[in-house]
Structures are given as structure tokens and as C-alpha cells.
Length: 629
Ligand code: KIV
Image (tube, rainbow, N blue to C red):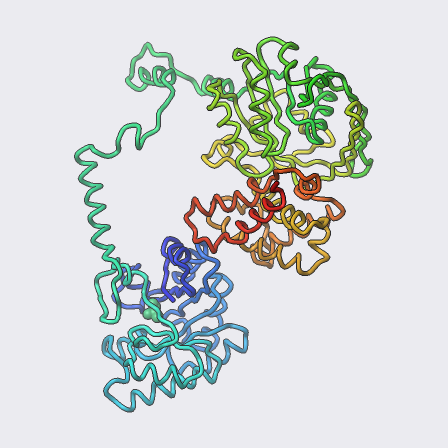
């Protein structure tokens, strides 16, 4: 056990795999700068408990009941309940033996796990006349300690902290009590040990108790670092141009420079002009020449729908096939169940081209390249396609149907490797759980059956484009739009919900070769889904914003996510997951790297202990084993 008082200290405990964290009232001294532990209030304890919880959900968390918060039984139960409900703690600790035994009983009767604390009890510092060892010199003190320990045990305390109890007495009590003890300054024979985080790291050096081992002198290191910062700023050595700074476009700089310098003749940019400029920058313009890469269910559905919404715009919509010499017009029949407000769709004629012929069919630009293939096919398909184009064909915008993690980065890498002009690359995401059957008859006519609206996540920047209608026309419907700023974050990902659901349903059904409904019906598969959900949620708790989609009512975040997964497994019950289809078709690849592989990658980047992502790692290896050839 170690104390933690805020997010960073708790994160350190998590990464170091400490079993139990105590949000101790010692934070009054080490963190809030009070002379004793008596000054910290319950509201402050809750504030700190919440921060500790945010970084840590694997540890057993204990809230330390502060001085004055358990003077009466009613106060005590209210305080304990606040720690559990508001502070999200697993248990509470209170100081005292026989005097608080009745409170311990009341807590346990109400389902609250309690840890006792005897020996030196810092909340009694004024009565004790200082911090001192307890039970070393007087038989009565040793007898009192034993009676206190028994009273706590008999009334239901789960553990007992022994503070500053002589080594031999602590061993005697531990060996004979029948309830585990946690020692601080009480020797090696207690069942467990606790220290104060700031003491152990040498951050707090006002008081240096004999029993505390300082594993680091962090205070000195920190003072040294802060001093260096101050010196470097004064000497103008920090920040370093380019290394710690951001660059701006030269033409913007040239415009702003005379304005800021007060050059009256300079052109003053009005707010309206600024807006116009921004719009121009964002505007993707007209999208007349459209190529779709990926001739599967999604690609052909996009093609047919685009054709439908484009009849008046004279757009060129071209689906690219890998098969050579297959250029032709095919009929895409979209059979839509007439429920849920979906209307029966007309058939659309879509031109399908052999990649090598596409270029001959228009001049110099592709306004939009829609990449609708699976993540693991993106790199190869895009590279092959680009090789068929001459260098001067410019691609204005790429929209990629992102299934799993890392697709944008892959596309970017292809353009960088080929040293080509990099288009605007935007992700869209098809919400999982759509039922899309795809039948193919000698590739002359494709028939699709759609039984639900197909929900999409799209970047809001597309609202200004003339193809936005594509995403709002049945069977498509926009589930959410995301802002430009969130797309261009360093880690570009737009649909965490889909990633989580895909990473549970797909691999489990693929490894066990079952339909989605088995996740609900088979208790053992459901147990696997639960464990996997738990591990994924723990990882995502460390990725800001990645769990924002989870709606928690009376349950924990893990339960809420699992419920969502089970709901999708139910609504898609008779479906064979796409990963299982890959395995059944004996494909030598699958989307596992973009699904569970993403959690392994994130964990490695966060330098988490390998135990924190072992299930995901194992799942990746198992799916790869199944697709290995
Ligand atoms: O508040 C605290 O840190 C404690 C430990 C010393 C056990 O109570």
C-alpha cells in the first residue's frame, strides 16, 4: 500500500502496480502544507480522492476519514458513504480502536469495508503530545493496543494499520490477530506495508520519520530542474526556435507583420475577410470527378448512393476494380427493407474501371478519392492505384472509411513515400452493427440488402461540400459530426465507440468461430467479453476523450461499455463478423492490428506494464495464428 493524493501520484502507483492506494489525510501536511493532519476537510479529501480515482481503476482505493468527520455515528456513516459514492473509493480507514469499534460495526453492517488504524494515530497528536512510538515502554500501552486490535477485528475491520508499533509487538499482534496488518514504522513482520508517497520519493522534507526509507531525493532533483529552467530563460537558451516552437505560413506572416507593426498603409483584415479566408482554406470545392477504391459492399453502396444523389450534377462516379479488363457498367441493386423510414431504392448504373484505365477517362484531377477497403488492404490498394496515375494527376481530397485505428497515418505514409502532393485526408466511420448483405453475380450486377439505416460519423468540414448530400441520403444518416480540430489532432481517430465494439465482438467471434449472438447466449464467451472490455476500458481511461461516448447511469464505466457491446451483439445476432468472414475465406490477413492491435500500441506508447494489455496482445496473436499461412 502507498498513499497517493492526486492524478500523477496515482498514475505512478498504477504503473508500478501497487496493490492498494490510501488517499491518506497525511496529504494535509505533504500536499496542502498544514502543520498536522487535523486541518484537512472532508470536501478536500473527496476532491483528492476523485483525482486519484481518475488515474487508477485497478488498485484497491481507500479513503482516509479526516479528523472531525466521524464524531457521531451519523456523521461517520455519512462520511464513509461519501467516500464510496462521490470519491469512488473501495473502502474507508479511520483512526482508533475500541473507541470506534461501534462505527466499524455500523459500516460493515451497511456494506462498507473498513480498515482500522492503531498505534500512533496522528489525529490524536494534541492528546498524545507529539508523534511517538506506541507500546514500547508501558505494559498498559501494549495491552491497550492488543485490546484495540481485537475490538476492530471483532467488529468487522478487514485490515488494520499499525503505525509506529515496536517491531516485536507488531509481529505478535500480526501472528495472533487473524486479520492482516499493514505496518508503517512497525517492522517487516506485518502482513503488508504502507508509506507516504511524498516521503518515499523525498518530495516532502519537512518531517523525515525514522521509519521512512527515502528511495529518491526528488526535492533536490526538482529544485535543480526548476533552477535550470529559470537560468535558461534568463540566458535566452530556452525555448529553442523550431525545437520548442510552431511555425506559421510565410504568406500569413507577411500580411500580419505590417498590421502589428502599425504600418498604416497595410491592408487591414476585417473579420468578414478573415472568415472568407478561413472558408477558402477549408473549402474542398466542387467534387465532380470521384473515384471509389474498394469494390466491396461499402464501396458499391457508396457508388450507388452517390450516383443517385448526383443525377442533376453530372458527376463522374467511378468504382475501381482490381480485376483487369473488367471495365464496364454494372447495375447495383439496393434492396432496402421498407421499415425504419427507409424507402425502396432504385437500381443505379455505376461505371466500373480497371484501375489502369481510370486516368484516360478524365483530365487532370480527381476531386475525391473514396477509400472503402479494409484497413489492411488500404496501403496496397492505394499504392497500386497511384501507380496507375501519371504524376500530374492531382487528388484533391481523400475520404477514408475508417474501420479501426491508424488508417489515416497509413494513407499519409503512402503519399510521403511516393513524394506526392498530399491531399486533404478525412476519415468517415460507418457505425458498427449495420447489416449489409452483399451478393455478387459474375460482377455484372450487385445486389445489396439493407435492413437498417447506416449511421455515419463524418467531419463537419464536409458540410460545405456538394457531396454532403451523400451522407444524409437514405440509407445513410449522420450519427455525429466531428470538428476539424479533433480530426487533426496528433492521434487521429474519430470513433472510439466503434473501435471498442469491433475489438470485442470481432476477435471473439472469429477465434471461437461463432455468430455474434453467441456472445450473449454463451456465458463463457460473455465472461471473455467482460474481461476484454475491462482491460480495454482501463487502457482508454488513460487516453483523454476516448470514453466520452459512454453513458453511465447507475453502473460503472466497464458495465456501461459491456452493456453497449452486448446490445450490438444482440442486434447483429445472426451476423457473421467481418473478421470471422476473413478467417472462413482463409484470408491471410485481418483487421486485428487496427482493432486490438491499437490497444497494444497505445499501451506501449503509454509505457504501461505488459500485464495491463495482456489480453489484447493474446487476442492479436490468436487471430494472427488463425490467418497465418
Ligand atoms: O494519512 C496517512 O498517510 C496514513 C498513513 C500513514 C497510514 O494514515
